[in-house]
Image (cartoon, rainbow, N blue to C red; front, side):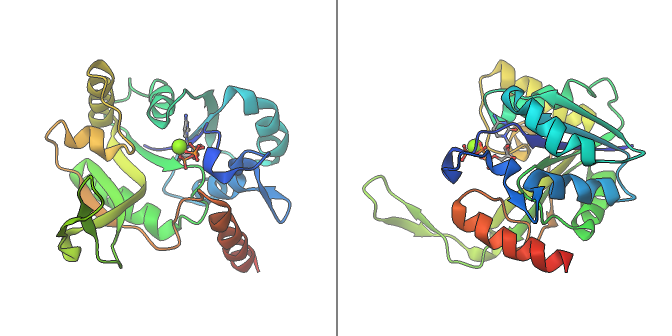
Length: 230
Ligand code: CTP
Ligand code: MG
């Protein structure tokens, strides 16, 4: 079984918007609904769990839940203060199914594609842990605390992590428990698994699968989603 765990419990500080970014409308539909749609339509996904902020429940029910008509098992749960806490809240619903697989995805990456889901599912069956990523187009520098360059990284071995990041449930559950016990805070899920010494393999994401973080990203997403719909 393949379970999509979509985290959308953040408050979107960097967006600077009164409406939380996951609820910003494009063609009358909230961003988060576009993200959910991709997983709902995919024949590869069996179940969907959405992690939302407690304070957004009414918005979520009225603007999103009532518009989803699906035969898939779809549930929601309240998230926590950090992304990692929100992932934890979602995993608590499924940790007792160690042999199933979970695709953890940011609710604010609405342009994820079926091809990416296919690569993630194939990868996680083969390796047990995969991270969607893209090669870096820019040359990357390591810098010193005084702001000068320490060294130039070899671009061919540097990748930019995206989501979905997909795992056999037993692996990510062990990893997140360990992170919690040791007070380790990661900005993505792979980092927790890497600490276990379990290899996480890269699968190709796409430039379109960017995370909507700033108002500029939202403007770009509006264009992209309009174009996709037409
Ligand atoms: N997220 C979450 N729970 C949190 C924080 C983040 O579920 N406590 C989710 C966000 O809703 C988002 C994804 O994790 O879908 C990626 O996080 P990010 O882009 O950082 O979103 P926010 O934390 O909401 O934005 P910001 O960091 O600008 O406040
Ligand atoms: Mg954040």
